[in-house]
Length: 73
Image (cartoon, rainbow, N blue to C red; front, top):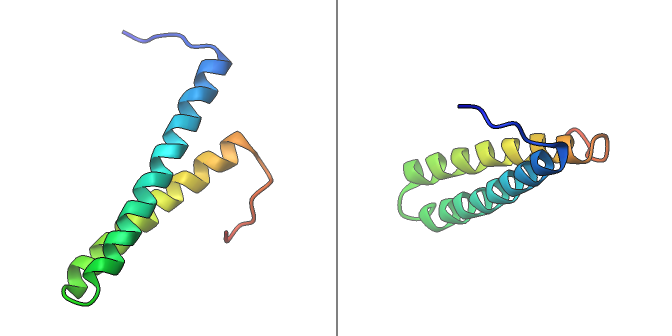
């Protein structure tokens, strides 16, 4: 069953998702730094996961505040 939501609820959901993606991004990037000295392969995997969450966060940022973010940062 599909729920119909208004624009305010949709924005709240996007903002929650953006916040979650930001936390996951930081978690995986921190984990990558911790793993780098002892397990370079796992560190690369963690860095890739962090970059994935970063891309999601940036896409959601652009939805919430279009045109306020540069292409690289």
